[in-house]
Amino acid sequence: MKATNRTIDVKYLRTFSHVARHRSFTAAAESLYLTQPAVSQHIKKLESKIGATIFDRKGGFGLTRHGKVLLEYVDQTMCMYEKLFEDLEEIDICKKYSIAISDSFNPELVAKVINTFRTYNDIELAITSFSDIDEVNKDNYDLIFGAGKVLASNGKVFPLNRVQYILACDRSIVPEECYPERIVFCSFLTRREAEVLLSSARIDTSNVKSWLRTSSSRLMINELHAANTFVICPSWTIGEQSCNKRLLVENVEMYIWCNEDAAKKIDQAGLRTLITDIFNDNNSGIVIQ
Image (cartoon, rainbow, N blue to C red; front, side, top):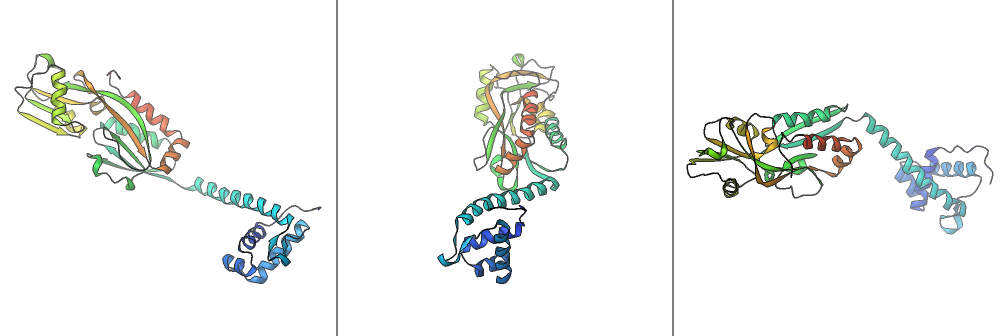
């Protein structure tokens, strides 16, 4: 078979694919929203182009040897054709991310995350904070930054950092010499767990009059300099605040949950590595175990 002109109109290939699938000019015409004569004309022009018959009319629209080879390449061509336009459309589409971030993360850390996304052009962000992971509907978000309890759902979870809880208080207070009257602790912990951590640090809690459990980084930062007050939280909650800090024995894990589509996008853009670096750098002088 000789071909002097190897250019074939894509619409002829698409028509051929439909006729081969439906084994009928009529059914192919209906699926393509064409008339039957138009379908017949496309097949004739295609056969003329390749110089061979592609259907065995006597065998009930079976494919000839040329037709079988052609169909194999048509399938590949149509897949590439569709992928081409998907990729071209992707270039012009603004990437949108709906993000939920635990309010235990200090504002400076949240700002770093947002700025990392903003370094890439054509990215639109919608940011929401949450206090309880159990109340987060993962279907509403592309990415969720959390800690402690991991969101149980479909998608992918990537660890960001693992740090120890800290005991923090005003610089004027020496933790080992103070009898605190107020304990503010991160909501990842129960009161009993907070009591155990204080006991392991040899802190006398006999004078404690108030226990406050919260997820709010802002509140814990505000409480740092209150009189006779200790704060128990991960180091990232208070960031670079000037205060006395002591390592406690319990660890807490930071993570990012992504739906399948967002996981692919942030990997392709190199964002996951940049985000992980942010959280690994945000240790505020606290030793990671």
